[in-house]
Image (tube, rainbow, N blue to C red; front, side, top):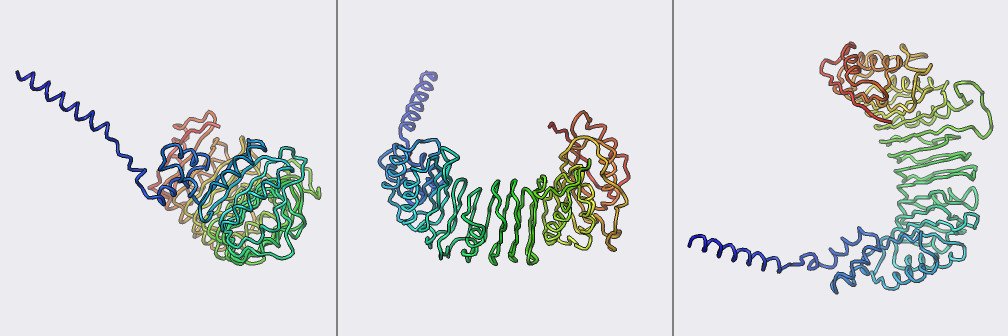
Length: 463
């Protein structure tokens, strides 16, 4: 009897659970349009349009999203007119916050590209991202139309690849704060400088130049806060007048580089120099790969960054014979240094450690294998600052060394850090090759150290 009652109760519970499962409440669809559109704005337009098949409730929502993100790089010309035009025609948002178009096309399709962009701009466009990938690289680049330079609402402009900038006689981007120009073409040498000088509230500038040389870049923007640059296989002269700069990033070939004013507000800087044969062929052919004037160019750039709190520096694989002159500059604000170590730049690292009395974190990433003749040497060659003995590494708490191979120079460097860093808390060594973690850890523990509380960590990495 009891068993019968139990089975009956079990059946009723299962029936109840079954009924509960049949009642599914679609709480997402009951959210207001504004919130659903906000959610859809994080999706590419193609996926946002796909939600229209869910129900009648979702069918019109994508047309209200103030963002269009179209990647048509793998679609031919006919779908462009049928798809992009159709999307623009159906889209009924009162304004466009962002219009992104990445398309592969030829010169015959430029008219359609221009029409799409113009349609977007007529909706008080705030952000434009445009990338042109040509069917045939020998074709003329897409010329950014003059009428687009009159857009008063544009806050972000990002142009990439085969686009030519040819400026009208007069124009202004009164609202533009972020400008990105990646491998675009310029109609003349003054075009770049004229463009950025016509952006009175510009705060963020990114540009990359490769291949075709341009004689001079001038960046004169009092409001500029963030600057990112990349030069590849191109000769140039660069002048920067940006006193409000707080973030600086440079990558590539280092040529004629000049800051007109001190960047006193600088907080973070990243410099990754890729040394190549100079265009004027002024080289001395020796085993060190020394290039006349190279060290001076590196020094002048790094010296301008002496106010930075965070510095990431890879000075390249050419020897900087004249880098010792950095001593007059004191990096008193520097608390973190990430250093890319090459065969010929150990002394650059030495020089920086001599002039960074408040350094707290040091990360060294070695980019070569094997021993070299220009490793760590103590004492440091050349003149040293008078304050150095009492302050050198006195604030260093963290030291990381990547790709440690156990060479004599590397061992001497680690010993030096342990001896000088009086408040060191953590020392992390990442070893490569056949080095055993245990043997490295045992060797480290035998070195004299100034800090009794330092924690050693040895990790294996595989390159």
